[in-house]
Image: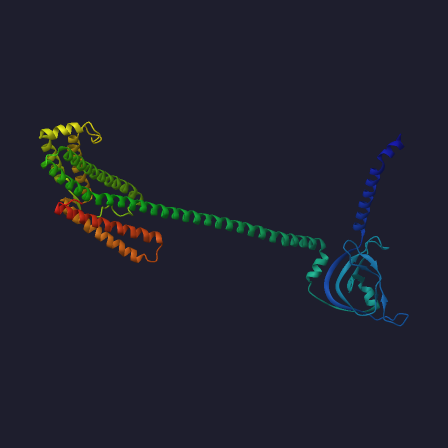
Length: 433
């Protein structure tokens, strides 16, 4: 039973025994081997002087080679002077007859390493002279192998760690720099996009304001023309009344009332453009020109309204004119929003007079006669046309779209001037256009 238990302990137990034995032997070897202790560094020379049996000055001396863990026994042959670098004390271990023996030794520097030889043997076999010297770094590292290894390890760690840390720090700085540059670029792009958007929005707003102003000016140009056409139509109505022709008379009155409606519509266009202009100009933070029609005089429709109302009432007082009027009420000649032609003449005319009065006051314009308004419109159109032609000359190197816009604007103002002058001539001569 006992043998069986030993057999089961088998290989693993043997390995443990071997390992324990090696550890024990190593401890004995290290603990009981030779031990060297430095006394001082020197700078000396040993030269053998004894004569060997063969007649040479060579000696063979036993010593201890300087090793990492222990000192091995060697017997070098010395025939020439050799450098001596240290003096020390060697405590011999279990390899000698007298373990613990202490002798002064010298370190001789051979080409393959140092050997410690008893100083007494050197003096017995040759000449040995030396002087003291200061210890060197090599001396310190040789006598402090553990510390040297630690220092080398620390140096290696530092040599590896410091560049890695510097590289990591540089990567971090580069990443941070790239991040900041990317943020700055994104911010610049955002600001540029916002500035471009603001510029585009401002251009669009100014273009819209220009469009509103152009619409209002076209409507303003039409006021005097429309009023003049209505005056000429009333001239025809008076002729028909004198000729006692009721149907042509009422047709002329209806045509004149249509011109009044067109006049009123033009006022609505101007007022709507003015309201939209003020609303959109407010978004430009005051960086927009004031709304203006380009004329200082607006036609006063009061005289036309009075004349139209007077002709209507006069015709109604004539029996066969009123009969024809009642017959015409069954047709589609009634003005939308009014029960009769008379109501349309009265109320539409009142609205027209009130609205143009308010408009003239808000735009700092004055109301005057039709002739004065036509002259003012013609003069304003001429000035605007001239200004546009000057801009067209300065825009010689600009794009074709801008030149076309300026050219069309100048032509339109010239046509407005011609229409105003032609209507003025017709009104003054009471001639049909």
